[in-house]
Length: 166
Image (cartoon, rainbow, N blue to C red; front, side):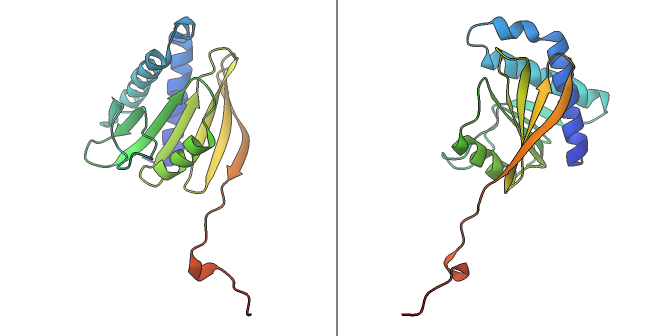
C-alpha cells in the first residue's frame, strides 16, 4: 500500500467517523471511545478497498519504553505495518512528536490525530523520520488542509563535527 493511498484511506475513515460518531465528543473521558470508533472506520475503509490488512488497537509495536506506541495499527500481523496512528484529545508534546518520527522508521505511514472535541477541526500529524507535517481536518466541510511542516535537527556524530586546531 502506497503512502498517499494510505493517507487517503485514513482521511476517508475520518470523514466516516465525523459523520457517524461525533456524539462521542460529548462523552467524559472519551479518548478510548473515539480511538475505537476511528479504528472501526479505518477497518471499514480498508474493506471497501478489498484490503486484507488488520486493524488493531494498542498493539505493542515499539521495543523500548521511551518510544511512543500507536493507539491503532493497520498491519498484516507479520511485522509489516502500513499505518500507525497515535490518538490524543489535545496537542502532541514535542517528545511525542519525536516519538512519532521514530515510529515512521518502522511503518509506511505514521500519523497522529488530536481530536480537539472543543474545536471545529482535528489536527493531523504526518511523520517522516525527519519532519512532521501538520494538517487541519475541518469537521464542517470534511476537508483536509495542509497547515505547515516542521523539521527537527538531527544530531551529528563525532565524525561530522568540526574541530579547531589549538
